[in-house]
Image (cartoon, rainbow, N blue to C red):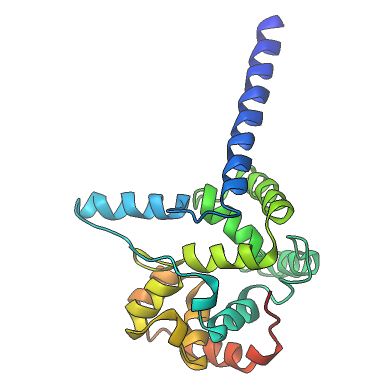
Length: 227
């Protein structure tokens, strides 16, 4: 019995230390830019298995050097209530749950921008109950420490946008040969439409439904509220 208690105490201590490590990073990133994310490291390792010289396409740019078109497109596509919620869109989660139950499989996630950032920065792409719980805990940390603009700035700079492509600047140059500050409304809407499945759309740029989804996002741009 004592052995089990010791093992349990050790696990709790390890969990506390791990979350303190995460919280330390969140505090640091409030004013300093992350050089990489868990997703970046995971994808770089995957690419280097095939080509040891592979590198990621990524360049950090400040918030003001990212087109307002792209900011509005991402919010319209991914999290329309971003500036109002505290990390979780409960209506969106309920709607996603109902869709998944109706279809008998996961077809919608309901994750907010804050939740997606938590996942991208610290967690793997594998979906497990434990990962969702950790994602929620990190989301609370992000919302407690950072304002919405900083959360969104980091998000725009680290999310995946293709095979080894991360962040708005790299995506803009990779797909349109222009800076993120110069993206038009139609270009921004198409990039936003790619976010849920970026590697697939990188390889299938004429995929059925992508243009239609981008058109819907573009129509919603004027309704998106920016932090």
